[in-house]
Image 1 (cartoon, rainbow, N blue to C red):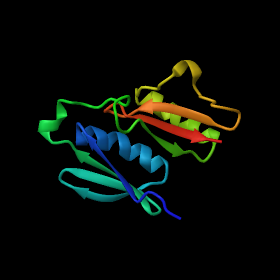
Image 2: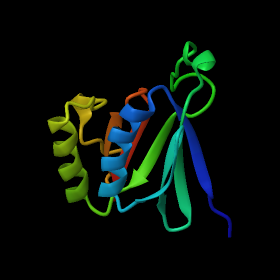
Image 3: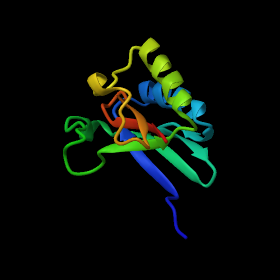
Image 4: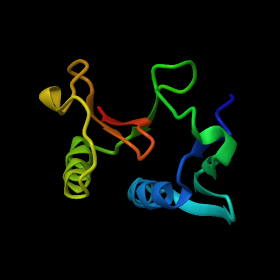
Amino acid sequence: MSSLHHLEIYVSNLKISHAFWSWFLNELGYEPYQTWKDGFSYKLDDFYLVFVQTETDYLKAGYHRKHIGLNHLAFHAQSRAEVDRLTQLIQKKGMTILYPERHPDKHDSATYALFFEDPDRIKVELVSK
């Protein structure tokens, strides 16, 4: 059986991204893994997420989830109550909830999800059964 080892994401502002991702990943049980001048990572079991400061020469192009490449990151929630709890935290932090007219999103009767954006507008999904 094979699974992802790690995923590396370049960000426009490492300090802002660290503030965003550290609280969220801690809430999901991830632990700080690595830190260096231009990056940091968080680990859960054998998988880790890496965040790296984009070099100045590449910042102008920006990010958009509808371009070729990453569309969104989806995380498991332990329960619908966890989705609701994190929704409240995200709202208190003034973060953008996507698709508010259909929140919580129910793709079908078996799923319950929250969609929101990170500081670079990468879509993040938190989904429970």
